[in-house]
Picture (cartoon, each protein chain N blue to C red):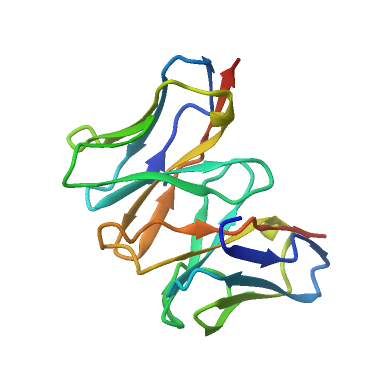
Length: 110
Length: 117
């Protein structure tokens, strides 16, 4: 049973618009959440994270929102750029364990 | 270039072969991880090493045998694998383990694409 789910396998967005990637989790013990970005033939690269004691973390064009009551996490990218086209993985951690979602493939159309 | 290298990048092996995957990190980290990524499945954490001691072993079959001789190197020894073990094997490292704010970011290598015939 997957503890971290990304229900949208793909997303297409026009350049300059906002990209919103969603993630749901089931385990209320998770205390840290992360987003990774992956290009083909490369390993995932850390993008942004958020602790369970916060509900928002912002880093430049990237903002992660955490809704603990809904067990929902989202990544906002604004404005989206063609170089953002990649697969985005949501991950959650607790007690030396990491759980990843299946990823959402984002395509930013020029 | 993330500072984590993996060799080989591609490996094809028969079910009776013995092979090893190698991971090396140049980041001064003290925790290293092996993950498996099968098609259309999430990354699955296999093993976690902290300060060269194994701290997690997530019900991985014994045909996978990890080794961490020092904090910079991690191996995954493979023997008598099955075709369903074909996957992308990713190594990662981090400074510290989960549970501490700001120390969970893992740096991944490019992975080894393993095919078991």
